[in-house]
Image (cartoon, rainbow, N blue to C red):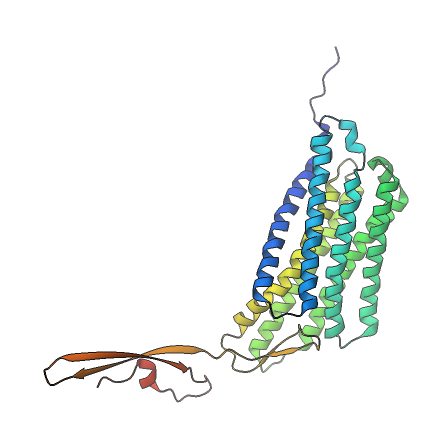
Length: 337
């Protein structure tokens, strides 16, 4: 009597991808929240930047929808059809293409920052832009091959597919590393030994740049490793889907972090500071003038011995920390009459 196989082949082949798509959906929720926060807080940004954010979110919606369609096709529509797991669903190519477009747009945004920070260095910016274009070319090649070869085993056996997948993810990782290193270099050159608050702001911006580049580059490298080692699993594809969400969140996070960095560092600053988010490279930001409400109470005793109290509220500006002459009577609320 033949033994019945108890191992579910879907678990090894599709389990990792399903979990990673769930994680991608969670990241999409974070992207949506960050998009909402951006449009609420930065209504004075340029129309082109706000349109760029809107396009990024729309691409995220399309990418997430086809990730769900992909899982539905394999798990629900193809339920019980274990041989069908070997077929490349038509939604795979769309998810890869939208991820490539999304990541390229975000990388172009960072390349523009390199262009501004490097004082329009054509050689440096052109080199990074070249690898970004290579990433697009390899990604389109992978998309075309996913429709040309209908089965995963046949697709992964092709040298052309290996070149496009490894080349595209490798180029993406290289661009992320180059952008992070370049921005860190030019930001470190802008430090001043006299302005500690400005140095703290530079350090925070550098931290955001390095962390964002490191996370996305790590995802690209891991995807290549999993593609080469896990031949009977689609876990590499799930990590590619997550990578697109990481790009969108890093982009929106860098925009929403502007006010956080400014408020965190400039609470005690008494001189103008600068941001590198305008078309000219830097934009002066006046330090906030602290306000304090002073309650002044006047107590008067009339002829009948009754005490009448009158309370006034004055809005006054706090004196500059550089001045040592504080009006203590005003701060404490005045004298009793």
